[in-house]
Image 1: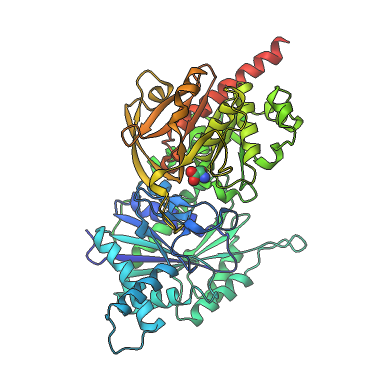
Image 2 (image 1 turned 90 degrees about the vertical axis):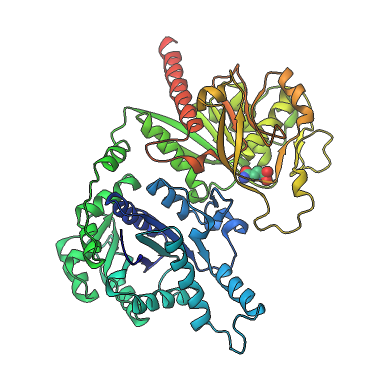
Length: 555
Ligand code: GLN
């Protein structure tokens, strides 16, 4: 039992995208493997209240917590590495901090005072961090500060962290700074100057890092470590090489081998007994695969892979479990839009759709709005008509229903009212509870809901249970007035929630694997323990590949 809650602060230098979230998660994982009660927090220095209203193409996926928090995608990394379920409090934004302070000011909490960044904003930041570590009875809280040192936005947060170092015992805080050692093609050696400057910038605001995690292509050389140590005023033992590896799940091991746990625990004055063998067993499954399959992810936000990071990870988890390497092609759904819907109606497929025949499985993730939706409908239809394993998530579930209604039930104008409010066949409609809502932030059907599964169904077979709980993020739902018609044509609805008010799962029994889920199974998936619908989708895709192989063999 740790007497004072301890804090590890992870800051970033040089540029964004260095993998601070993975360093944070890996550090926390190693401490958790020491038997300590550890959690993580992500600080996002933007003014949005939460990540829910941000464009996934610029900010990456919106990760949904069980309590319905719309969080930064790093919270997903923490959950996956630590195998815990976090709450919305684990994502602090400038928007939330300012909003709390302003609320307190209106309530008269600061009567007579001039309310300022220091001390009022910094006090609010410190109290949120301390509150969580006490509320959750943590030994160590690892706090990742978003942005890059030198940004105006992150200054109040860094100032608050500096103050915590001053106010707490020497052994209660630890600073990790993540930087970069680039290699220029023409010169070839690892450059340390960006790291030197970044540490100087941090020191200028009063923070001397205790450890540097340096991103680099190949392991840091002894000479690079010596140079960084000298100029950054950090012992060589505390300069960690974070070189490229094939799987993020190997990062804890890499850091462990360089002695990160020893350095941290010594400063925090904690004794440790670290056994990473269980984690190694899991991370090993991400290398040396037996098989290889090709999956197409067809979505609206494919230009930024981070838009679907949980879906991507869930596929890798399933592949690792089934000893199969997953090769993913990210395809913009707009590619499958055709003006010639009549041709499609008669089964004359657009050329680009036939490209999909080379994949062993097709996955359509979540999405919002009209752009690219016709392409998704066409691709879902193609997967159905050609017996290609299909997993549709949220928007992918809804648009698979539209495709089925249009091309199997012959309701040619079937649509979701999200795309065409005036359709005479509204298969997907706005949820009644959403109708009176005006604000767009945090107002969808969010978070964990229970789902009842029909006995004797593929869903039951997959989950081996009559009920599951999964996370949600949507405004629209299946219109059950059309249920009977779709069932008559061979689609089954085998999962429901809220006393059958809401349909959550579709399947087509005659198809090799055609499965749609209104919930987001990806948020539930963990390394070593893939979410079952993903696992069965990959299983079916492996089978698809084998049958394709046989076809080629026999012809
Ligand atoms: N746009 C759809 C809805 O709001 C689907 C949402 C999603 O895919 N997350 O219901």
